[in-house]
Each structure stands twice: as C-alpha cells, then as structure tokens.
Image (cartoon, rainbow, N blue to C red):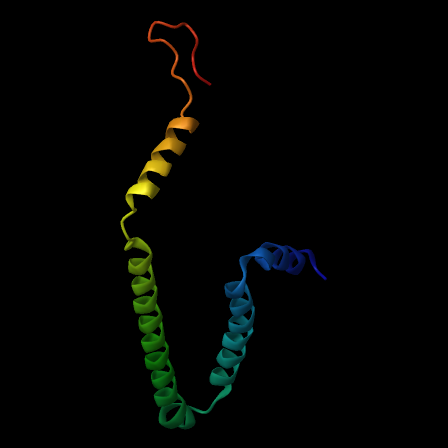
Length: 112
C-alpha cells in the first residue's frame, strides 16, 4: 500500500462512521463524474439532469431532517431537571471537599 493511502486510512481510523462514509462517497462521485462525462448530450439533458436534480433535492431534504433532529437532541440535553435538596447538599459538600486551600494574599509562593 502506498504511503498516501496508509496515511489516509490511519488518519481516518479513529473517526468512526463518517470516515467510512467518506471512503464510500469519494469513489462513487469519481465514477459518476466519469460516467456523466462520457454520456451523450441528449441522454444527459433528458434523463441524467432531472435525475441529478432529484438526487440533490433528496439529499438536501435528508440533511435538513438530520440537522433538525440534532438540534432537538441538543435541546433535550440542555433541558435538565432541578436537583433535589439532598442532591444539592451532596454536590456542595463534594465541591467544598475538593477545593484546595488558598495561599495567603501576601504570600511569595506563586501557583503553578
């Protein structure tokens, strides 16, 4: 395998589902471009162009739907219920225990 492809696969390895989608879409677009370039003009104008317009419209609608779902999920994450009195007390105690003592104001010791 060439260093280019090895570097590409190594870079995309930890990126999850989107990397796989990229590796499928890129060759598909290249093949579609070659097919459309070799297609006669009358076939392109009567069949391929309306089909491409439909695919673009469908893709736009799917992206819009996913964007709206992502916004709804983000709003659900932000909306949290209020903590009970017991939960607030425990959280405050935990914060107080974790807080480091502050140095005196006139101290020559610098943090860090």
